Length: 165
Image (cartoon, rainbow, N blue to C red; front, side, top):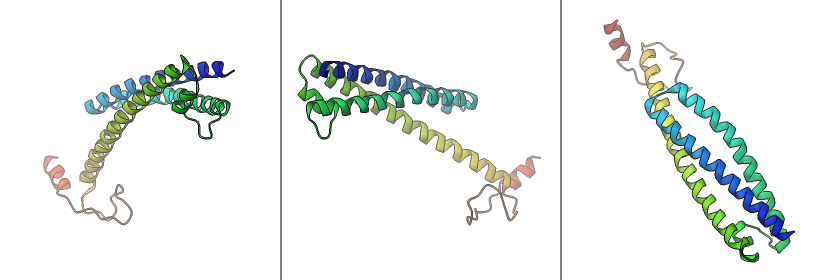
């Protein structure tokens, strides 16, 4: 049973790595679409990311379940793949350690591209808010786009737009 669980855990980790790598590739595409300001591309990539995220979540849940079961089998109070690999014999120990390392790398890369995309999205939203702020800065009491209780400084944006029109 121990060997079967170790094989299942290895396969679950491999599946999680595949999902994480697919999500990373989508993240790179999304970053490029955000930089090019292709909103339809960003929307499509977001939908694709959501589908892959479901798979990644399922694979992660299976990995955690198998880690717990295998940890119980080898007598670990707080099981982890690394600790399990220390308790299992070869070739399982090497395969599990290697897979865990690859998963860490894949998730680290994924976290980096996700952070980059989050910052690009915030920056883009800042531009949109600035644009609407310029459109709405005609001295009206309620702009409709500001934070409650926040009175943005009066900008000459409306005057510039009126002069162009």
